[in-house]
Length: 159
Image (tube, rainbow, N blue to C red):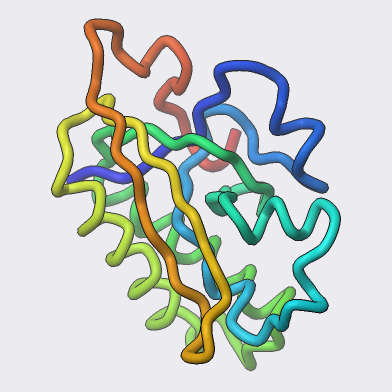
């Protein structure tokens, strides 16, 4: 099973996002944050997060590039609980238990996207507002000889 980790090739994300994701943290699309946005919301650093930011599950920060890496089922379970708690804290979900199915679906969608690609594949996301809501598109950069483990190290979400 694969998921995506935040990758930084330089320091640009620290300048363009209000809260940058931490290098190596697990990420999902995070398009849910923009579900009720209008053109008026798409300004400044929020615009950059909307336009092409992946959502870091540990920090709630954003990152431009993610790399496909193997993840263990126990890590997925811990990240699901973390995201469910995020929904309670920031979006008013009534409880972690009520938010868990939505969190599971968000992470499952990202696992499905990542499982379609080899490890070390780099992904980018782009979003636009349409009359039907937020439209996401993904770009795939095929892996090269170097592994992403030099940029994104396996670890615990408790670190």
